[in-house]
Image (tube, rainbow, N blue to C red):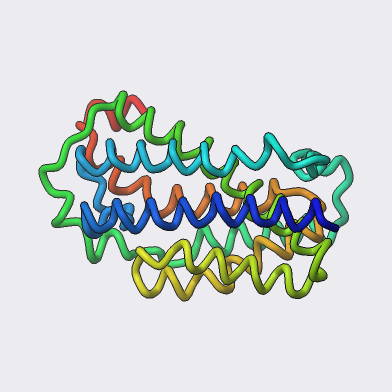
Amino acid sequence: MMNNITYISELLFSYTLIVLLMAKINKVRPGIMLYQKLQPGNVKLLNCLHAAAALLMFLPVCVIHPLPVSLLIFPDRISLGQALAFITVVFAMGFFPWTKFKNDHQQEMAGVKLHLSSVIFYVSLRIITLIIYEFFFRGLMLVLFSASLGVEWSIVINILLYTVIHLQKEKKEIIGCIPFGLLLCVFTIWWQSVWPAIIFHLQLATINEWPPLQQSLSPQEQTAL
């Protein structure tokens, strides 16, 4: 029990540092957390933020024993209900009318150009960070808080912390963290794996971040991709 409290404290310490880092960067470059505003300077700063956040989230992995590594394994057996629920969520997210970028930020990105190498590096680092991010939130935090407070309170705290870390975003996204955070927690517990959460999060990031990245490339580079 004592070890569990110590591990939770270490997770919350890393979490607090990440929140403070995000607040500091947003103060220096207001609006940078709105991933539709991916100007060259913002991309470089976001790369630094993602790398630092990934490192801070990875540090507790070095001291927490035993690690819930089984959550990193994709289930070898999936029930029909699990499969149908997963496919339904993927299709619902894919066909939801995500028009925020086109309507609100298209003019802001006009004339902004990024090199293909910058986009590839940004995307690669973003994928790595999101995988670590989901193991940190839906893996370590969910498991350790569940062991101390029970599953229900663990989910409530997880959603709260997940929402707070998005306070630098738009109001709609902050509110959306509540149902989305619940969805990720439920699937992680149901599947006993963080991979559904990782896939959903990567899908959402692609929907929101790919349009400005694609628009910033030259027509030739867009064709190459």
